[in-house]
Image 1: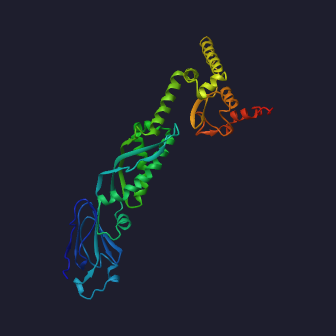
Image 2: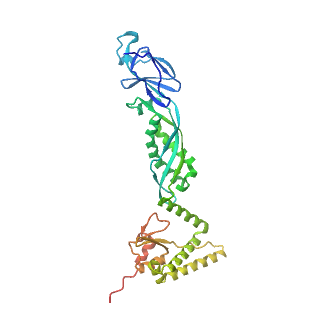
Image 3: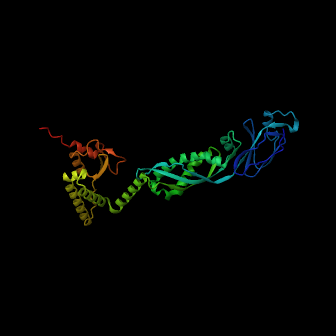
Length: 365
């Protein structure tokens, strides 16, 4: 058994933790610790002492617990078994992270769930070497930067799903606008993720997003862009002008499609009512151009599912005519901008009254 006179660090630079390969030490063995390193003297799984930069001699005066753990029958150069571990206090800045599969985020402005992929980079360093050594090493004899990166990758991605959602909701940021806020998002996430790294004796030096991407051809993204365009159009033209424009579209579609729901509505005189509504809206607009009064609040328009297909939008008068025509009933689903999802028509207070006023079927003769 060759006893070790001098213990030195002999591993690669990217090793954050490294165990000296021999345990055959003796009283008088010198332990050399390079700058930006810590060394630990371990016996029986317990840390008996730690050494900072410099050359240290192993002796009972330096390590008081040594006498209690080993027998020293050979005098001054007594051999014994112990481990010397090195921890490098390096800073590693180029650690990449990214989502292997998309994470699902709900757009806080439009309530649409979107698949999102994110990529970025972070840097870390060992700030508490003993905590780091005791928390992560286990039975390993070394621990490289790549192992640290692999270990924390899952923790980072798991935390990001929640953190991005919280930031979007807090600031009311649409997913389509998220790349405008990458710096703010990076700072927010670094502050939160830092707490997790501290548990393992590590410090986050920097953390940032390189990009956040959405698949432009995904149906949910297409739907989100349509919702954004619609909102912009309403803001530009005004809600009243937009609803008049939609009413004209309905009249045009009804004229082109004499069959189906549109034809039935035209046949029931709904087209005439619609035309009157448009005329009324145009009259209101014309009047408002010559008065200082605010325009009247436009009626709420609803979309309705008829034969599992979206139809509309319709105002209350038109919906009542659809009820009378047997096209919709109490089980029909409706939606308008203030509703989060498709809702039973009877659960909308304004529309539930339509069924109370609907006459019973005529008696059989």
